[in-house]
Image 1 (cartoon, rainbow, N blue to C red):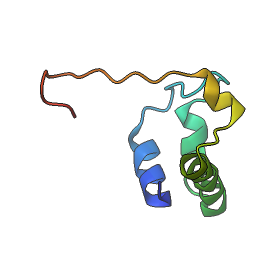
Image 2: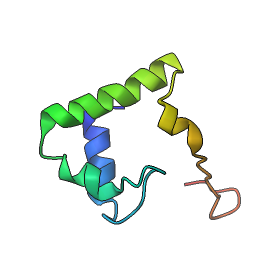
Image 3: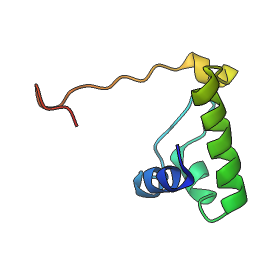
Image 4: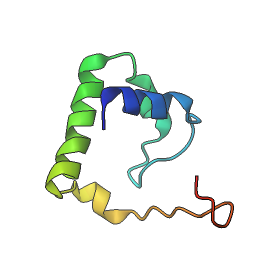
Length: 75
C-alpha cells in the first residue's frame, strides 16, 4: 500500500464508519491525513504485516466479507 492509496481510500469514506473492534473509526484516520509523518508510519505498519505475513494482534480478531453485488461482475 502506498501513502497515496491510503489517503485516497480514507478521504472518500464516511467518517462515522467503524473500522475495527477497538472502536477506532474512519474519522481517526481522516484526522491524520494532513500529517505526512503519521500517515507514513501507519502505512509502514500495514506494509510490514502485508510483506511478512505477521499481523498485529488486534487484526487477528476481525473477518472481512466481500459480497458480489452483480453476479459475474465483481467490483
